[in-house]
Image 1 (cartoon, rainbow, N blue to C red):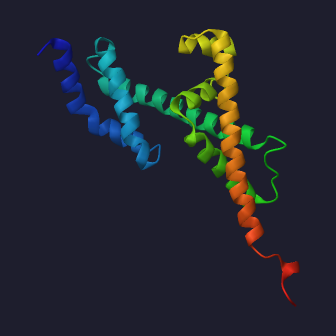
Image 2: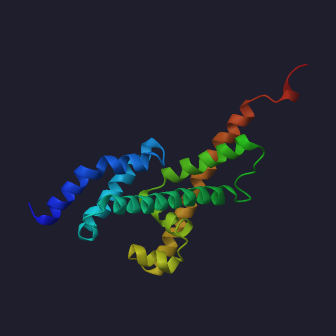
Image 3: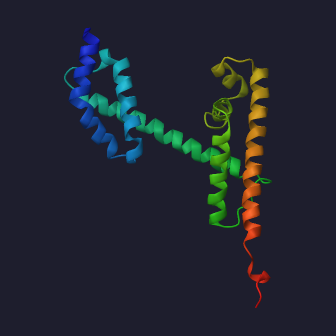
Length: 182
């Protein structure tokens, strides 16, 4: 076993539980494993930078940064959901229940998109990249990216429209107070 691999193995075996508990005290349990894995991925990549006498504080520092990135990602997702849901011709918020249903519709519509469409929309909406910057990330020409972005937005709107039709049909199936005999 080479020195780096041995050092990482010792680091992992010695501190995995501590890092797990550190992360678990800060986020919901279902996400802990992903964050801890990311912390140790960074440690593997930078095993030479881990201070010999104070590895645990270094790992906690990495965990803090990973948690901050996770929080930013969640915030961006919420902002995207709110921005898409706030399109004036797409959704009229009547009460809190309609708002929750609208956000759910956006999430459902977004997850129905292909991975490629999701990434295109994330780069523009979450990462706030220009079309030229996003095209560079994906290794595409600006024109090709612009066309793919246009198509991804159309597909998202189509999925949102389909979700809206379902919500509207559910509303019309529920009798109003004025339609009841009385």
